[in-house]
Length: 188
Ligand code: SF4
View 1 (cartoon, rainbow, N blue to C red):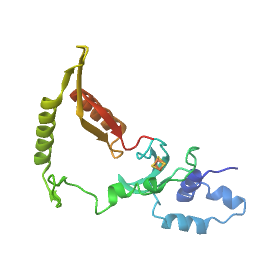
View 2 (view 1 turned 90 degrees about the vertical axis):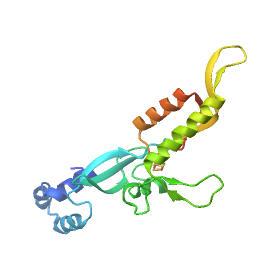
View 3 (view 1 turned 90 degrees about the horizontal axis):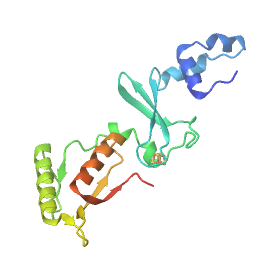
View 4 (view 1 turned 45 degrees about the horizontal axis):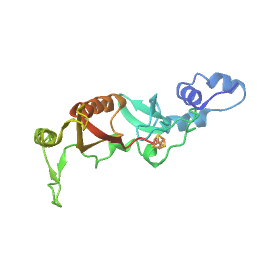
């Protein structure tokens, strides 16, 4: 009988396969002990997609009690066959790294020092500066007199730390402002 990796981990965690393997003369007790000792013991597997580029490698996220415990490449997905590049392999650190930024950091134009700022201050600054540039540079009509509502002096770049839905909303906002220069870090 063939068992894939997920089946194996599942059964060594629950002991369901234990009887049939024992009947075959295979002692799985050491494997069971090892599996329990693993940090993924008693976790729930959730298959997800690496957000960092358009290759979209599959990742198995191991979750225990609503908390992400570990991430690894999905060996059953034909595109990456369990492999991950350095970015995908470091995915877990997106949620666990102690150095992860949790507040906006601001460096004044020409300055060399980063300052921690509140979200209120930061959003106010962004809104004020975007409006100022848009009011100054929005092109309402082209040379032929056709309405274009185009803002060419602003560039908008997305982040792979946003999911599809967040990117869709951000894209619509940028288009709504008239921004035509749009790119995304995760495109290939
Ligand atoms: S960033 Fe790396 S792991 Fe993630 S989808 Fe792209 S190639 Fe795969």
